[in-house]
View 1 (tube, rainbow, N blue to C red):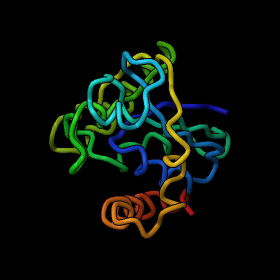
View 2: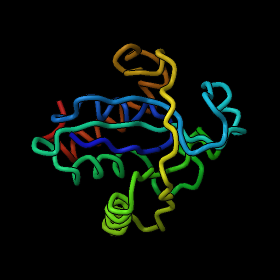
View 3: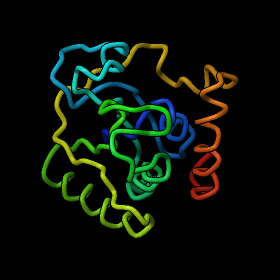
Length: 173
């Protein structure tokens, strides 16, 4: 099993994608990359903690290759938008890849370089060392499944999920 920690704006969006990805065994929404211990959602949303909304995605690399997990990351948000994803604005919504070691950092750097060919604007995804990851409150875990009729889910997440299903049809249910 492999676990990657990724920030792509609001964690609800990629959570919805990864929850439906073959070979993914666990998705945890949370916060990392900041300076506040045990932050809560309201603190992180204030933009004062330095944390990003992020996901820890655990997957079986023998079932789903890491390239697919990273491809879904770049498909599930706009990595060319600095500290913003749609209406969500602030450093807590930054595009970031949090690495555990130099090998993972190099893998992330290669993924950014490869993905750049898909975008006209420069990718602004940061590569940051992974510090403490704080799981988000229970209401934020698998939010889309629990709230499919929520306005945010219908307007923001549904189109991202459709795009991921189109581009990665073999991997998403």
